Length: 246
Image (cartoon, rainbow, N blue to C red; front, side, top):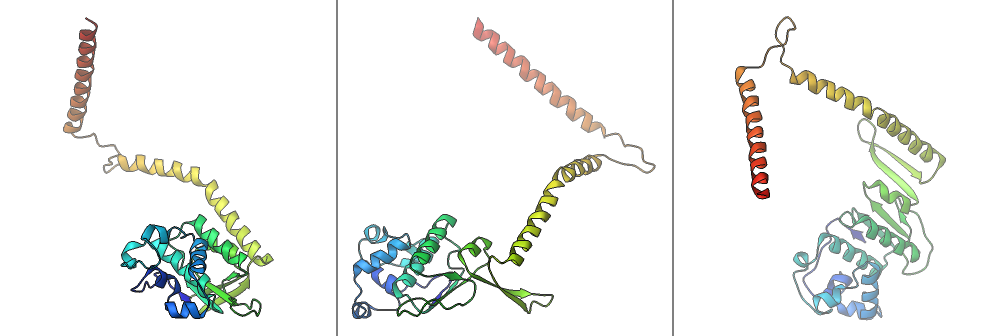
């Protein structure tokens, strides 16, 4: 089963959106009922949909009704309903908030599903997902996975790396990145100081020979006008306050 970033929403009822590509007859053959569909929606944090949309038999243009995050969570509900042997999620939670995303992954773990960055075999029971592969650029998802497959490496982009997450090598790589970030952060104040120095230099007008060029007359006139306007404003305020006192 493949879950893309933008799930397909069929023309039909709310029930059809959850059980797609099955029809209602297929659902009955699998001995599934509305209770099972509601359970799948609740696990995908969409338990409110049947009540909000008017029941399972409601027909709407679902691609226009549901938000981006709701569409992706609905795809997760389909996954939980079908429980295929193999499932691929391609940026399938990119529109879901990180807290809800974490809850979805925890739900998969509770069901005995392990989200992976590469294929691995998980048990042999019928109707159990044996391998679930996530394709994503979000580093925050690694903590929910067992293996990580990195593609597009090397100068020509034709190299790859496959490794178990949490190995000593990976820990050393993360520590190296943290050290580099600490070194960069330590230079922030130095960069700020240099930036201010450059700004001051750029603000000055230079002439040949290194002498400063005096600002044109209109600049001084503008400054005097602004000062006079400020003084007049202060006097007006003082008069008004004095009038209020009388």
